[in-house]
Amino acid sequence: MAPIVIGTRATPLARIQADLVARRLGALGVDTEVRAMSSQGDRSLGGSFAQAKGVFTGELAAALRDGSVDIVVHSLKDLPVEDEDDLVIAAVPERERPFDLLLFAPDLKTAGEGETSEPTAELATLLDAREDAAVRNVAAAADAFAPLPPGAHLGTSSPRRQAGALAVRPDLVCCAVRGSVGRRLEWLQSGAIDALLAAEAGVLRLARSGQLEAPDAAIRGYRLDLRSWPCAPGQGALAVQILRGGRLDGHPAMAALDHAPSRDAAFAERSLLGRLGGGCLRPFGAWADARAAGEERAVLNEVHALIAADDWRESAGVGEAPRVVHAAASVADGAVDLDALAGRIERGLGEVAPDPAAGAPSVGLPDLIVTSGPATVQRLTRRLDPAIRIAALPATAVEVLDTPWPADRIDLNRPRRQWPWLLVSSPTAARVTAKRALREPAWGRLPWCALGEGTARALLAAGVPPNLAARASGGGEFARYAARVLDPHCPLFVPHSARGGGSLVEALEAAGRQVTAWETYTVHPNAELDWPQGWQAAHARVLFTAPSAVSAFVASGLDWPGSCWAIGAATAAALRSAGAGNVKCAQEPTAAGIERLWLDEVGAQPKANRDPRENG
Image (spheres, rainbow, N blue to C red):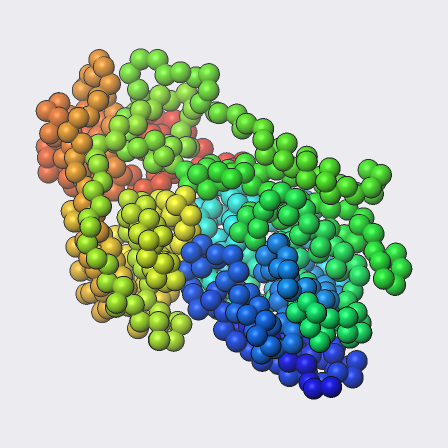
């Protein structure tokens, strides 16, 4: 018999997985040859635009169909739930550990670790644990995330992990770091992100093969408990896929490769997702424990699932905890019924979440007017006492300019570390850029960097979490961030407002960066501002969120309010230049910054020292 040709993605981890299957086939006396190929997903560094269905599996399936390979080896979690008529999963080898690891950057200053969890362990210690110790040495999700400081930057491109983490800690900023496991660990060690979520199976396989450099002992973290933090369906399992009716369909080597408990557990997890009408992009986790009941069969012992409501990004975009549903079933209940479990999950999703503002109508003049739309107002004021009366007053209107974007200047023939980065400089730029990338997918392939927390949250709400988020409020700070984090040969693309952006570009060019910048939109003052009836300037408190909002107020002809708050230095300068008095500037353009402004003005005690486990 001619050697079996094994197809695989060309990434280091995928090659290791294919080699595992090749060695097991070799032990059965079967000759093999491994053939690596690139996938669409491997040729992109973007966030959610790079995660369309099948981007990691399409080329491999095509090679099976045209006979270029005899089998392909996938991470089972990457395969779409829907079966393809002409392809079949012939074997699921014994599953690797399905846990997620939450890893902390070496220099991260953490809060007190959770009282009920195990203390953080060095990464090498986590990976070296025996199987029985690995099962015991786990931390509940709430305890594991508790040590992260407020506003920490969490690296993960998975919607499941993003939604789950924000449900526990809505103050976190999610960054869709991509690339190899080793590259993601480099981002962590550099301090570009504060924490990283990763599948233990992948890290473990790389470490065992010697293809992962000895991890820095300063990287510490937790192994997350599968009951409070279910894994992706099939995580840790490999899928050996063949052509239905092909020469390996029914081959005894396929049966010998198969591990019944691993197959039954992974297929139960995938089946549960299928019952809910989901796919690999849905924020859904499930872990099933199957026990061997004979040589060729297994029985489900327990199943745990977590799913986020469809609107989870809307909540997360304004800093609120997304609504998630937990459900479980076990033999202790009599049996594990996946249909019944799916029904309970669907009923939980169908419940209407309570509106915290319901039943609390605003009476009289507002205590604070914010010159932005409701979503931005909600994000900026979420830390204020709910009894404070707040009014949203959009002071500007955005006009998107119909100008061509310089896609012809995107050069992806560089080494991946030197790929161009798209810099998104404001929440408005985030919304405009996300819509444009839907029309021109080339932009979605690039890595994106958000300037500040508000921009990062706006991108997440638009469905494109940034790959990185700079802690910077202007061009100079971002230039220093780029010098520390990004390869100096990376070009920077900067779409910006016609009314601003020049200072950012100048600062980047002065730092020696290669910048391509162009005007993408402009902002007009809203000439028809509907100020609250009974406006009394002397007693009014207004938070101005942009210099254009200051221009809109000037055009209204009203007297300056008694207290003018500015979201940042540029807005504060515009207020003073226009003649406003009593100008106060937020230390940072975040909910915490606005909370401090409020507390400074009214003389109250801050809530900043509260436990971060109290949902941000």
